[in-house]
Amino acid sequence: MCMHKKIRMIAFDLDGTTLQHGNVLSERNRQAMERAAAAGVYVVPSTGRIVSFLPPCLTELPGIRYAITSNGAAVWDMQENRRICVNLIDPETACRVVEIAREFRLYTELYVNGRSVTRTGDPEHAAERYDMPPEKRFFTRKDYILKDDLAVYVREEDVHPEKINFMYVPDAVRDAFHARLEALGTLEITYSSVDNFELNAKGCDKGTGLLAFCAVLGMDPAETMAIGDNGNDLGMLREAGLSVAVGNAIGTVKSVCDAVVADYREDGFAEAVERFVLCEDI
Image (cartoon, rainbow, N blue to C red; front, side, top):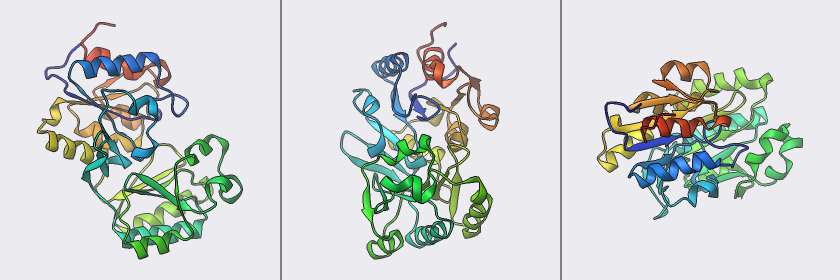
């Protein structure tokens, strides 16, 4: 079925929505992307990841030029390797977050200009220093910039992070950590899984990134389709002309969406593209 307005952009989440096993794009999903791009549709990853952690299975597709990254804080033109929209965290807030995280003994990542910055020694010692579970350690395999002290780095270099990421926050400290962050009053706190925290500047989310990108293109947001599964997707799902939840999405996401498709492990992304963009009966 096709909607009343032609879809000109697909903004899609990665983990839990489109990719399998962290960095695997199924053949059906790949073909759906290529066919949509060939039809003149913008195919745009919209992710909490930094641009340098986007997998080659996406960045090597000729139809993918732009990416909404760091939960909407940075929209990248990957062909020209430049940010075309930004919404950043101020250095004072970033320093306070780093200091709070140190109290709670949490693995901390600063997303800065498309790269991830963390403390020297932390990636290789994530398990023993932070009790990082095995399923999370894939995300420590980034091309890091390493600093001995993150707070000193932010102060001395006047760093404005795109996002501050905590990929694993143990259940025992989750509520207390959240309360300390909320008390700052300057952060947007979202989650892409139950045990992580993703921090952006107040008011920044994938929805504001989508709107900013549409403004650059001169596109009506009603001509966009967003696909997601978790809390950090809510902003773009609310702003898109057509919102789609994959079958494994949390209840809050399904409740705001116009349609629900198959589980991400069953190529729900491709189903959405085939039904609502390519207008095929499946």
